[in-house]
Image (cartoon, rainbow, N blue to C red; front, side, top):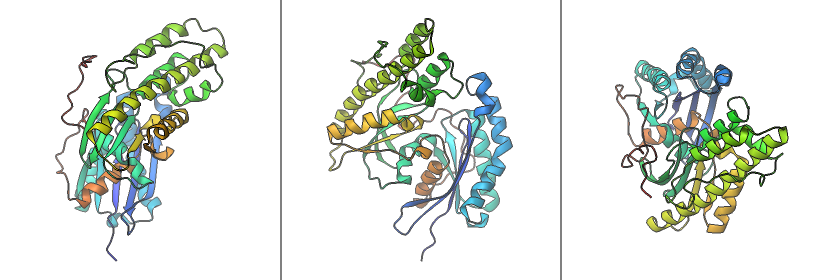
Length: 357
């Protein structure tokens, strides 16, 4: 029996310190042997958001024992690891540097290969951790820092169809939560509050709803929330605003995803149309349900990662490392941190709201 690769993955792009060990079975299906994630919620709570310097310090304090725990939990010995994969971007450079430095030192000491991983590619492939997934497919990546529609054509092959021209969706959730007085990270709490409210109470704006293709915008929505919040007097008002926000997001995603479906179908002739939703906001059950129903309408198969693999984690980083290791797509130890590393290298960065509609 041929020995299957064992890969250590490390993630430190923002405020989660994470490590994972994965391998694969005889059919080539990934197996997560361990997945350890240490959150920094308590570190940043009083500031209402992530403070880069504090996040980096926390990574430095935790990364050694987080990696050791991942190895211990996997049941494997350190000398059995075949390669180390680490997030190299995008993210906060002071945070990325901690994981990268540790991964390079680890790989150098054991004299094993090192793989630099794009964090977004980890999200893009994360559903492979629990399901078979064939290229090409349409991806909606919605997280705290990114909101994009991408055609996933293969490992390392991506075409961006649409993106946010301002705030990411996860950021919009977190900022709305902060406005409503919910402690950081408050985004996931919006969905809970929304269940207690009247979603038709407030008529909120849907920026670039009828233009811009499948590009997205959330800054104007956030501004409207801020204005309305100044007149909130009761808890029910808060619940109603949360519910109206949740409903508005669902309506925006429904419209923009429908447009993305059309673009994907025009550019890709496939027997089975697959739609993958990944990133932290993919854990929102209302959004999952709405997008699943939309897929049923449009004859797409919907695939979501398990909830534990929606947020930042190292299993998805190890997965990309595994795929690249098998193809011998390895990196030198001088590979830099890339705080602004896109999946589609041909897609230029947006300058403010400078998307042409």
